[in-house]
Image (cartoon, rainbow, N blue to C red; front, side, top):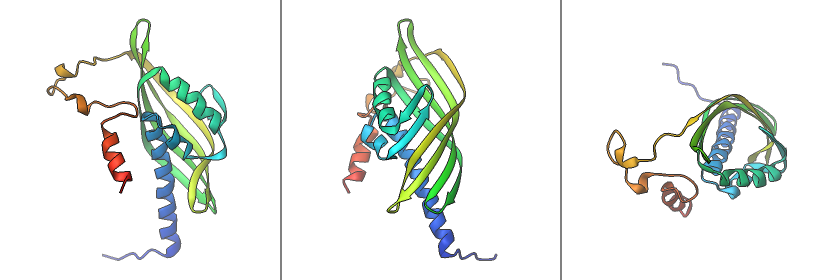
Length: 182
């Protein structure tokens, strides 16, 4: 077997790709845990976001989405493959996503599934990659009546209360608070 020893430039590129992917993952966690500070951490101050019906600055988007999330019981964002091209201190990324939202309505709960692509322009400043421009393309969505919340009748056995998550008080908060405290 031939051993491959990457050069310094290749290693730097791989590290930068991972830092960009980390930024994308923090966006999803910020949305799902309703952590507006984490959301702010993924955008540069002058960043813009075109996100469904929203068009404006990232700061305005975060204020808008915080109000929108108040009406949503549960969200879960999944990232798929991404294509990232780095050019000096800029990067361009297209990342596939699936998003799940459970909402209350006058007729009961509904579930909305969205899928599409995040198209992001990143900039690296001081070794930190953040989004400077985002265009969200929604390729499709589906809406149906929500499934049961009766976790005691779960097909694989009752699910303990401390294993059911949504929002910032999610059971994983303990773990992440422990990790971040060192």
